[in-house]
Image (cartoon, rainbow, N blue to C red; front, side):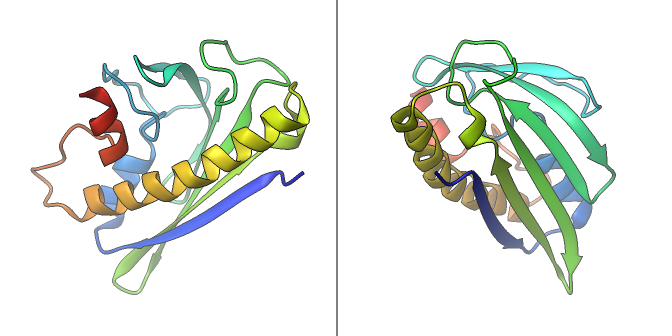
Length: 161
């Protein structure tokens, strides 16, 4: 079974702008309520929506303007973070000419305490989910500074309606 999702997007925006969006814990999870949490190791937030369920997201590590990592239990909505229940989400951020490269890597699917079919479904669902969320990150980052919006992808915004 594949254990790692990796996707990259190039964004025409300032590094500061992209970094601000990437380091919001759980920004990729649609949520009916936005909770402001400092992106510091050990900090936790809960992202919750009627459609997708409840997800705890924990900040693992932050290296200013280059790297941020988080843990979440995407295959286990409503459950707390525990060994065998989480995957690691990493964002690698770097300036490239007049743009910013953001690479997301999510790993740990093979170690989930679930059957093969459930692990495969989580991997496939998150692979397509990251395509949507990285496109949303690009769109939100490239918007003017004053019009950030709700911080949800179109998928998340549509699901909330």
